[in-house]
Length: 332
Image (cartoon, rainbow, N blue to C red; front, side):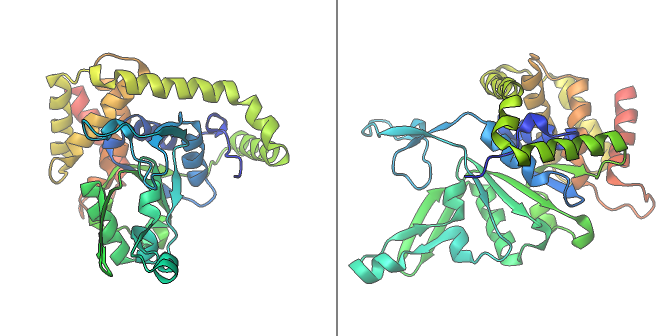
């Protein structure tokens, strides 16, 4: 398997890195949408984080990486092992059978048995499902992903098969907004939305090129150089996962979140929920015991910018509108 670029060696793109760290601490925040220029490290960051995460315990032989902690009470204790957190690519041209799974034709023809051949959703369970150019995804796959993201299960009923299996994953989509917009139904399923841009200052561009060249010339030596920093981030994630249940969300923080969403006119309550969960995960990462204004400020733009309605009287970008609302609400 190709060596992933070290997460800690990624230059800049702080908002993107923070968003996927938050999703790693609390997958309940929802997926991460990364929109921006090509060649800005979008897929690099996702694969780097997955490689950074501690291995997970799964049931041996299970194609869905089943969590042994969720086995029914009284059931025989299954054999388990540690496996890497999966990162599964969903190609734009993938068929529905490849995504959800289908009848295993080879087994059906050779043994006369109807057996299920798991698809990409099965492989992605408990990991990351990555879709590049997500805004170009075909509508029938968008509908399918919306259903699975909402239920956490993949249900396949076809060709005499009836299969239901867990499919809980962090959905990460990337794309270039100039190539088309994302359907609102799928856009709403992403918890956080971040913008990435090509760096415009010379020192940053030089450092990015220098590090990438060093990695490609000798991946092992470059990775070893950044191992200690990656290990520090890994420990930070593990500690945050352990303390997140103890992080308090005071009424004052909930009130701030509600005022902010009202000010921006976001539909429904998903904005408040995402804002609260993201702020709590950030507090856990920072080692804080309660969510405060500083946490809400840092996650407000990623949690809310993709939930704003178009305003014909305000041609400012969504990020500017969120920042303006933050200044007004938090000044009160």
